[in-house]
Image (cartoon, rainbow, N blue to C red; front, top):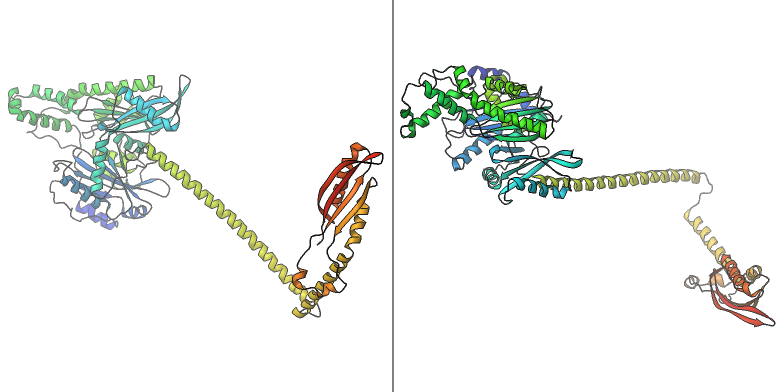
Length: 630
């Protein structure tokens, strides 16, 4: 990646005029050979969007650079670019050293400053992660992971203790009339995931997630509107020792494949060309191995010089005498091997997997952008080719300075930018796997159910409160109305008048009760006479009607005694005449009539037997009846 251009004094003056804040504070680490640049979006937009939500920081640690990008999600669900920073790592001897950890800590804190709500997403080498596209039988959700694990182990055995497995369900498909699940599964070494997580935990900045470049690009294709990316697109990355082809359908990664060819094979091809053109004896390049290494580095520099964003060669550099056409022709055979592997991948994707044809391919590599390579790949495959340039993205906040940096530097931001657009909802995360997502989903379902229940209870309580308030208001209105009517009466009733009226009513009730008790017997006999049918004769009547009281006794009765009640009952003995088969029903009908009388309750049969009487059989019965008066 080329050096980022330094901010000139003129640009700083323009920034000041535009009310832009330029950070002129010295770096916390005294490292003279660090090539670093940090830019932010225009101050007004940055201050606005920084308050909208948490800041996402994408961290891409490559062999030579630490690249940081920060974004935030706006209220309308779109994303805003807040800034970036790229720092050389050539001064770091080991990425496991304390120097590296302190360096990362210092750069991160300098990058996002005082922002408290920060989500950190780090990149992991895609070469260390095995991504597979699988089609598995449609099984219950709790069996999906075991099915995927078995399918992968069938081809490439692995130990569950050393390998972390995760997957993403792409959707349901039908194959040979059988329902199946289309799945992207990926495995990564557990130790490397833990080591990456540990680095950031030690500096007090725990990671939100760890992902890989293919998924970072997936974030970009999903979230940002990119012209001409609709349909199926592919991304070809040409690395040092290997290359990788990723295929995306509707913004979703559906296939990825590694290719064992890359820049190294191009260097070897160019080295042969340089050796043929060189006038120095070949043995000089192999003396003690030192000149041989120098030649490899020189040839690599000659290859990278093809890009207009790389430093040009000098007369002392290897390959200076070669023209651009000669250098490109020398690497064509190596480049063609990569293209042929890509072509076979496309054929497998469309022919075997029965997916749509790839419409466009984006090409990137570890070297700076060289458009003839991009065009060559597209021409050989017969499809459109381009570089995934962020300047073409509809990304708020990026347009302010995108044109100030070269295309190679913009393309180099892609992994970190994709990570900065990450979210556990749609980004595969090695720290937050499928099981964790299921647990979170279950927790959210329970939380939502409890919340819905509480809302329902609140609505019910609110409705009851509203109803009670309405009733209270109606009662108050009735009271006001009654009070108005009361004021119309003359003379007005007072407490003593009402007390006298109550005493008079009570006295009348006592007198009425006394007369009722005196004539209770006659009332009982009259009721029995009216209810007894002609075929039933009563031969005995015993009545317990309580003690007789004189006329004036109810008026003098003690209040405690007046509160007591005495159980009163009757005992009836009689005979039922008629047809022998209808005797029982006649008695039952008689008892039903007695029950319907308001004077009688709790009728029980004491005796019920057929006995001879004169020349016929009769039903002899004894029943006990409790009176309904006290």
